[in-house]
Amino acid sequence: MKSFTLLIAALSLFFSRIEGGDCSAMHVEDKQEHHLGHQKNLCYPLCVTSGTAYTDIDALACAVAFAELYHCSAVLPGEFNSTVTESVRQWDFTFSREFTDECAVFVIVDVSNPAYIPKHIKHGQIAKVFDHHFGFEDYWNSTGNIEAVGACATLIFELFKDTTPSKTTANLLYTAILANTLNFRANVTTPRDIAAFEKLKDFIELPETWIRDYYTEVELQVLKHFDLAVKNDTKILGNGWAIAQIELYDPSLLLKDAKFLESLEDCMKEYSDWLLTMPSISEGKITS
Ligand SMILES: [Mn+2]
Image (cartoon, rainbow, N blue to C red; front, side):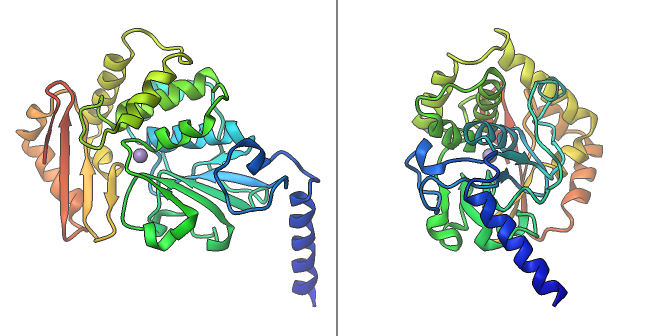
C-alpha cells in the first residue's frame, strides 16, 4: 500500500511538471523541428547528459550548449579527461556531477553505446540521442540522431539555427570541433564541421593563438599523466574493439619511451582487441 501511494505521488509530480508547474525545462517543438518524441507545447523536466566513463571536450560542449538552448540542466557524471584543459575548466559554465529528481526525461549527447549511459536512466526516459560514433544505430532507431560528423558539437550547434550562443558556449563548441577533428586533419572531418566552425567564429571570444595554446596545454597534461590520458580516452566500439587515442603536437618521442609503452600495455590489458591512435597535430598524420 505504501509503495503504491509513493508511486502515485511520483507520477502526479511528474505530470504536474510536464503540464507546466515547473517550467525550468523546455518547449521542444517551439524551438526547432527536430522531433524529440513528445507532444507539442509541453514543459519537460529535461536533463542533458553524456557517458559515465569520462567527459571530453566534445561531451562537455554538447551538454552545456544543449542545456543553454533548451533551458535545461546538464549532468556530466564522468570525470573530465585531458581534452578539457585547465584553461577551459576556468570558463563560466554550469553543470552538475549528480542526477537529481529534477531529471525525468533525458537527452544523451556524444555517446550511444548503452553500456556507457548512466544505469538508472530507463530506456523510456530517453527522448533523443545525439552522437557521431557508430554501432548502435539500430538499437536507438528513431530516438537516435547518429550522424557521420567529426564532432558531436557540430550536430548540437546546428540546432541553434538563428539563436546566438553565449560566448562560453561558442568557445566550447569551437574548441570541441577543433579537438575532435584534430584541427580538421582527421578523416572524420566533414564540410558540416567546417561550416559550423566558421560560423562559430562570429560568436567566440578567444585569443588569436588559441589553437596552438589549446594543444600545448593538452600535451602538457598528457605527458604528465599519460596512463590516465589513455584510460580516459578509450572508446569501446560495437564489435568490442577498444580504441584509445592520445593527441599530441609531436608523438614521436613518446613512442620511443619504454616506460610509456609498458604503461600502455598495462592500461589495455583488460581488452582482447585494442588499438592506440596517436594523431600528430604538427605533422597532420595519425600513427596507429
Ligand atoms: Mn565526440
